[in-house]
Length: 329
Image 1 (cartoon, rainbow, N blue to C red):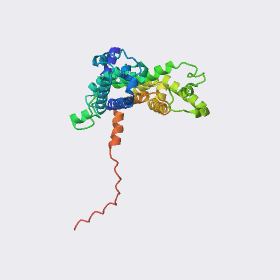
Image 2 (cartoon, rainbow, N blue to C red):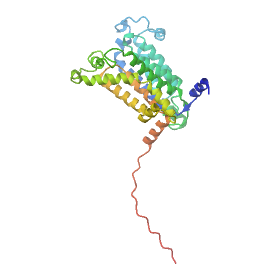
Image 3 (cartoon, rainbow, N blue to C red):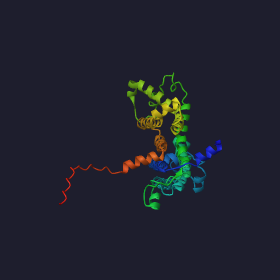
Image 4 (cartoon, rainbow, N blue to C red):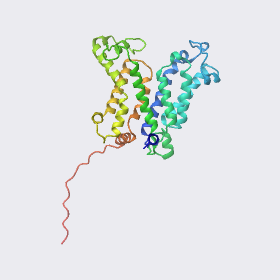
């Protein structure tokens, strides 16, 4: 088979929609959390100085400029519309239109003030772009319930949007690790990066004076974080080895035996849990973890959902077999 034929075959693969449905619902929920968090700090974030803000916002973007500028009416109107769209995305009603609306509205809002924007905004809009293209309401959605009368469906969807979410995770972690080239991060240095980061008021969630007593543990966490991020491309290799497990090779056998994907997911969840507890970096961890359901194949999710939905039946006591009645002579 030619390279082009293989590429076409890859993009034409179809599978169940459970992973995309879970990513869709979690992404919508993350956006609702962000809007709820930002609702009380709109003035310093996105309002012009004439309306209570702290900056002169001359370039708010085409959408806000057409609506009249960074006034309270415009900003609160956009946030309300975005919240409604995010709610529709979460429950799975018109998900592509809802994702597109959230995408455009979040781009308009987050580009008002570069001082209040971050990498998590880019990650959220990347996820929304994929959801615009994906059929994420085939199952586990209100749309599925309205069309079929059931919350779940076996309808097949295109598989490549799930591949894009996996690629986004690998790209995110891999490039982040490659940027950490200081002596405080890489092996051979002092591995003090996390200790110093957790002492900075801009990042720490609370004061942590006791970290000096466990400095060696912060060094171990620094090394583990760097190795996890730099080694994230191995996840793609693990998927390939999993799909070709019948072939020989020591590395293939090792990664399949170790279940590299599960180890990757557990490490990532632990990493983001630690970040959330110790650091305040916005919704970065939430939107990253929202993509994790894409790591598992729909058949695996169906098996888990089937087990969780089956009622646990109490074992019935067994009674001794009856002695058959003797037939009349």
